[in-house]
Image (cartoon, rainbow, N blue to C red):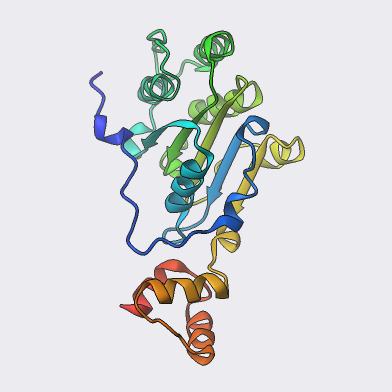
Length: 227
């Protein structure tokens, strides 16, 4: 299979990006987590926050922008291995299931064992737009990966809806940190900073209150309101 290289490019950051340190703190030290997830509908800034966190963490990472074509176990595994190689710098074996109905767990076991033995530095695997995949074999493979993840290898997901993964169990075990739409809404202070970034130097309290009431801190609505 010929891989589409542009799927490994992070999207460009939008203009007028506002630092959101309060959202980055929950992720903390990547060595203590196996999964970081941002789950919210379109327009909440999930991808931007993920990029800000990666920049702040300074950890090696690789990015994969998923689409509906990736909802195939064989294709998913091929891209996932390529993602691992980009994040870790390792040469990994080419593994392909013989059929779409075949479990990916043996392949995941092989990859986890090799990374556990050979990976020297922490790394992050970003699966952007994870809502594009819902094949049971893929979800089973990701759940297995998080349950038995090699040390220092963190999975970061962005999705418009909550995937069928055992997130509550992982949160109890402190394997996972998840941010939802309510977490991603702009605070009044962030709304003010966004207004100033858009050229409104001294927005009045009444203007900010009306804007916050109109948009509820949804960044897509803020953008449209100030256009």
